[in-house]
Image (cartoon, rainbow, N blue to C red; front, side, top):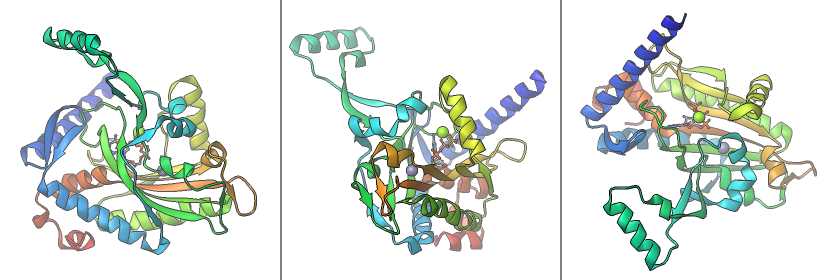
Length: 313
Ligand code: ATP
Ligand code: ZN
Ligand code: MG
């Protein structure tokens, strides 16, 4: 059994290394020297832009309010999401230099000795945003009007998950369509969007399965949260077998019902007076883009006509 699992791990790692090597060799991505951190070239941006535009077109009937945020959020806002309780291992903060001349000299001396010097920086009250919908819950006020509100949010996400899998980045983007309303309207948003998203991703020539998600909540309490997520079927993922049928498929998008999690944390009520419920759907833009390169090759001009026309490429 162990031997079998080890073999599986090795072949999966080999498949990941092969895809990563191909993306780098064919000039799609540029290695920046830290796992899961890449520069992007013109061919990547061409496909990435087409993926994002197609995602937006597929949700245009929502008539969602457009919001854009910086890649960092105030610590006070981050606090209220409770992310640090569930995923401390993925969280990351900004730090800055606040010292005097003497501390600066000590920093430079450490640097001169070839030592790491970031210890001389102090944590600032800013966190890197791990999920792009976070800032919206603090902005909608105490009550959302009848019918609820829809938001279109795309931006940077940062998660400290070091990996040589080109599908698992530290810095990436998700395009989210968020709804805040009643328990019924939030569930309807999550459920109603699933067939639309599936059809879109399948039109890209990707093999898609929709499966209940099992997020890696941290620690002992986390195991309970993870069980709850699966039992209550709160979150679904759109997975595609990037590394072939023998390995677990990778999530390239998700549809997530938060129930009253953010409504309670941010003190939001729906028009009927109850605690607001929310749901969001998220397109993982880099993952969809890389899944396309994995499925169809690194030259988009040679992709099947149907795929190019679905992407308006
Ligand atoms: P996974 O289970 O693979 O870690 P996730 O459940 O953490 O994914 P979500 O929090 O649902 O992901 O984020 C929405 C989407 O963002 C995912 O469906 C995926 O496409 C993308 N995404 C998540 N983590 C990463 C990452 N480390 N690198 C690139 N894209 C990511
Ligand atoms: Zn979200
Ligand atoms: Mg994750």
